[in-house]
Length: 435
Image (tube, rainbow, N blue to C red; front, top):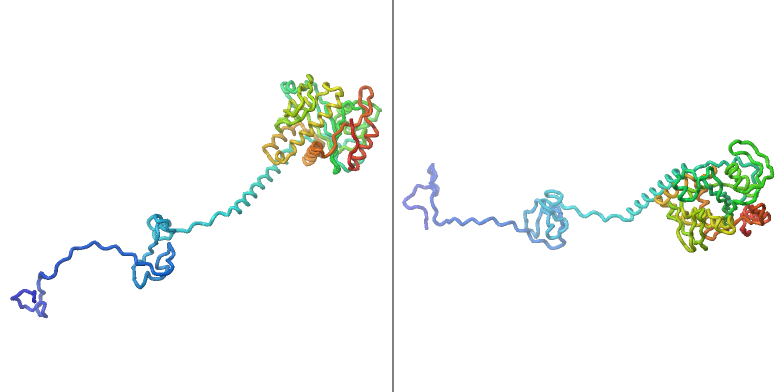
């Protein structure tokens, strides 16, 4: 069948040599098919074997993208997986989280908690060390080193124990009229010793010996602390607190050494205000009072039993003397008991290592604490811990042995005093007991 138009034999399409081409002709046997939308490219089937790594373009995983001999044409860095299906490494948007065409990042390593704890511990220890050193220099600058023991003459030999002469004075320095009234201190000028005791820190055990202020003693020859003039011995016998009133701490140390034969290594004195402030800064001192008592002059009014005393109550407790038959001896016992309890509660790691507790405690007492020129903070710490040891049963607490009275003054038992001094000098266990 020939579909070319009949009646025409011009040679076009049949190898004709005519110079012009044949015009457009309709071919009835050819019909235009309706256009279909282009089909999306199908993802080629996965080949057998382990799947390719997620997030790696096919051309990197295995050369040209051929699966089973079929060329998919996906060679443009396509990344498989998506955040919607939970596939790791899928893109979070066009091109993934790192930008178009970039693979996703793998999760980072888990934190090393051991290393973090180690670094944190180092930082904490360093901070504590800096705080401790700062506290030391701050406290050391506030200590009043006013007593010069080099002025004391004819001193006894040194012993094996470290000895402290601890003095509580009735100094009202720095107190307002309201504070004097509140603490029942009166308004007397100057200062006198209200309590005195020897603390011997020994390896064999610590010993605390109270020296009654009414003790009958001899004033020896001495060099004036201010004048530098030597005063010869006159055989004068006075109450012990008169030595302090006459020429201060240096003569008191000289008198104690002369009448006991025991060398004093360090001197520490605190006034009324500092004593009360320390107690308040500590939050009070817990004490077990065996028998209640009342004294209008000191302001004491206590019932028997365990109780926590504030600064005002504590000062009244250690100063009361007229409420007891043996006024001075009972008062010295109360003073020992209270100071031991105070040291026991102050000299604890929770207080010493905590700047929030240590700063107020030191600041409350250092302004009125007077020590000798050779006494450092370390020596003070040793003194407090020795007092704490006595309260904990590691040592002896006693009054100076008394043999009688002379003119209303208490006379020491010389034989017992000599034995006591010898045991302390030789760092032997103290077996002597006082009144």
